[in-house]
Length: 235
Image (cartoon, rainbow, N blue to C red):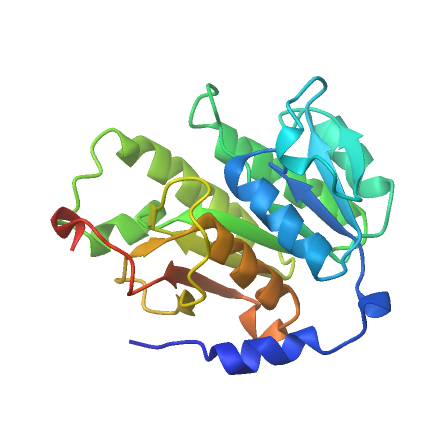
């Protein structure tokens, strides 16, 4: 198993906050997205949250961030958000909610097209273990009705990889309950046959660490925390 050394990643925190460029976050009001926004703000990044009109922003209450409203399924509205400011990075942490599985590739098409037209920022995509062909690594896992969702997420990954944009893909396996504190022991593995549990707080921490480390670029990582409980049926 290959492990990314957290010590090396932590070196990316050394530059002054003034050097940190703006970051646009999709899915910012969600459980994972809000954790990512909080971690970015704590690290000194200027953050813009892309939110739906009338969305519940309570998870972001009290944070010094900017907002842009729009619908991720509208290409023109995604493009308008990317055109408004030159971003260092775009973080895609959205979930489809009640939308069909096609939400994932549709949104990625819009994000890729807008990024290509407006500065080509790095794209950090939060995905799922088992996405696309990765599902073949886990014949023992009872993905069930998630199979079609994982196929759609794999399509989104492929669109990003083929885009020519600088990218990072961070897949998670079993997510712990929302609000579970970070353990500080999660790491990123390049072993795509590895699935474990992870907290959203640790995912956010790993996201910001990758933002400062170009060694993450052009890779698919699995977020892993060996110290958390993990269902035997997925092993």
